[in-house]
Image 1 (tube, rainbow over the protein chains, first blue to last red):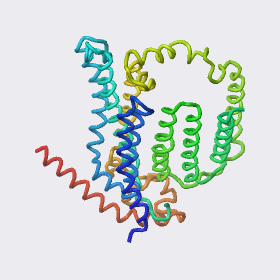
Image 2: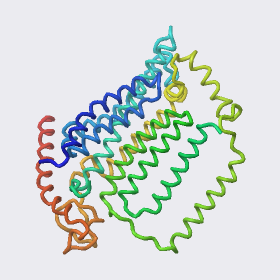
Image 3: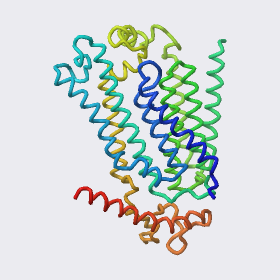
Image 4: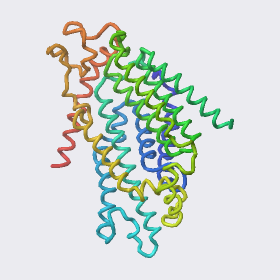
Length: 146
Length: 242
């Protein structure tokens, strides 16, 4: 019998909401407080909470370390790639207006969306990577440490 | 006095009390938890200063993730910090007092809170506030400045975060160096457990300090379970490549 039934039930109930909240923060960043950094940290926190309650191995099964490694690179490449794309379209680096020359403000929206998505990938993956790296180095918590 | 000023003073008093508690505490677990509380109170204070985005980040990063990372790091070290002799406390306290005095001296040069003519509110900040509505059509100026006007800086920040993650991965590896790292107190290799050096300070014969008998018991069975799983995972990936 597991001694942490309440923690398990409550966190199992909460983790999907935390993850969805991360995406709300991500895509609502234009209108309210939030953005890629905060959303990335919240998304990573939902996985870290899962790892704390159900163990690191379960979390690594849910979000494999290879995803984390790839996610870090996707984030930076997405951000840099947006800049290169604006270059290719004839604008300055990260001048999103060139995406839609007729409506520069629309281009700004697309650019901000892409860039924030890159930040989300990078931040969430790096936070998870650091947690995995530290968390894998020690024995599991004994019950007295809780 | 307006109510927000009273709230500010109350929150800053709480911060001071928590800071002193952190300094005085010996239990590292309590210190890490109090650091989380400190970040949370900080976040509340940022909200009263109308810096909602900063408060959001502080609550998520400071109170959430960094507390967990500190906990993970703490588990590799002792659970209690040692007493520091008074002689070794003199130099730090001089530095802290001097820095504090310098900061108090600098208060006179600071603009008043909410001053419309302060450098933050007058030059480029005012332009951002005016132009965001026209250029980008989004209500949150912070996002506009972060992602568009200051896109270069944010790119730099993202690369810094990437570099931090890369550094940790190069030093530790995603699987904790894949279990290859072994503590060698006094150059003697102790057991097969991946326990860190701090836990093994007693020497070769006595592996676990009497303070923590449990982790040792847990480490031994964990190792064989972890090993085959890892090799199995490696095999599958090589199979996929082949």
